[in-house]
Amino acid sequence: MAAGDAASVRLTALPDPATLGDWYDSIARPIPAPAGGSASAIAGALAAALVRLVAGLTLARPQMAPAHAEAGAAAGRALVLQERLHALALDDKSALEEFLTALALPRGTDAERVRRTEARSAALHRAGMVQRSVLEFAVEAAELGAAMFEHGPRTAAGDAATAVFLAAAAARSAYWAARSDADEGGAGAASVTADPKAKLERAESVERAVRVRLEA
Image (cartoon, rainbow, N blue to C red; front, side, top):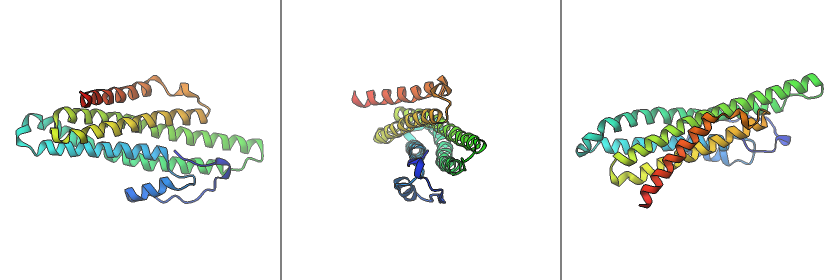
């Protein structure tokens, strides 16, 4: 979700980044701003874009006609994943804004402290759910990248492998971000069920398989 010293947080407007360069600048600012969570989503979106590239190269080669159906399906699904992961980067930003709003609430009375704690926990829960979605879509991007690594042009194998590696990194980061948000929100790591862990293991298994192929 965010980086920064919560004790010195000042709630300021966080403009929506319009370009990839805007995201770099937003993430790099040494203030509470979209950071690891948004970066994971962007990495996943870039992985999906690479899947689209390799699928498109496959479709452009008549001699690869046997792989065209799979490539067409991969290209279509990768576009959906790219758009959803990009949207999740913005959702992570919104979750941060909700968290900062919660931190700014008064805490002079018991009732105010309860309200602030509940608002903070709700924001962390939302941030964790965003990262679970990043994990889910990144795993799918990794699997599509692996399929294109197997069936796409050999000249684009490096691009497909990069898609897998980026997607697996996004999945790994999202999993641990969700764990962190659960811990900070008071839910504990137990609230991150076996299902997200199994999804992460799928991405890492795909990543290992591609790495083995590259090293052979």
